[in-house]
Length: 287
Image 1: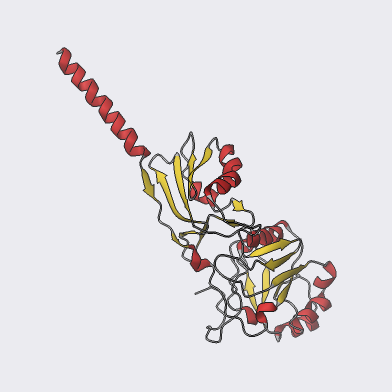
Image 2: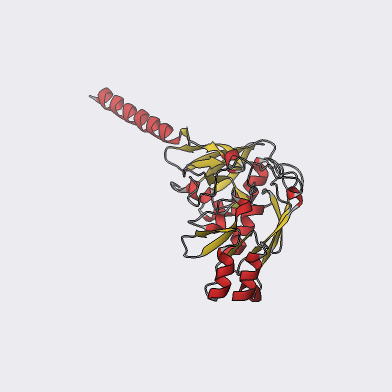
């Protein structure tokens, strides 16, 4: 009887230990190839030196748009809504989702010089991870472990929000952007972007004249435009695109590869925007 009880206890302990080991085991999280998010353009002669102008009212969303061009996240959503690895090529999670492991994309060049390694990424993500009670620790140059005291089922969503400075295709310069020539996935095809937010430029006549002259890469509908000014806009070389927030963009037909994120335009990628000779007509649904 005594030995039978011991055997039962040993079996129970082994079962618990096996279950805990099983829960702690790492399982790959499927990732699409992030390179597909940044397809280099083939600009015509002179276009690669263009610094395009945009007219948008100043707002927090505009600040976020500019930040996204200079600071990438380790993950992002692709056109199909799947997770794509940007700064990482692999992601694993334990079954209890308290341990996550990131495998960095090797040789990712930084705007300040050098390349991104696990220690540097851990230093950037560390405060966010610590806010959740966790710890970031580099295992080697390309492997970063994130450990938490509690289950973190939504960590991919967080990794798609935490930006890493100096990793993007553009350098941020106030309300402007300049091309980072060393961007890992190739040149953007545009030398830079200048954002204008002067309220006078959004008044009816000035706004319509700017579109009639083809000055803006895109602009937003200001909401109060005289009929005679709107008549000029209707024949200007722009397509209208409605965003989920209710705003309407007038987008230059020269930039048919620019696909604004209609659900959250602040996440739009300003990369590879020139149209090619064989491009299809502009499709506002991105099909």
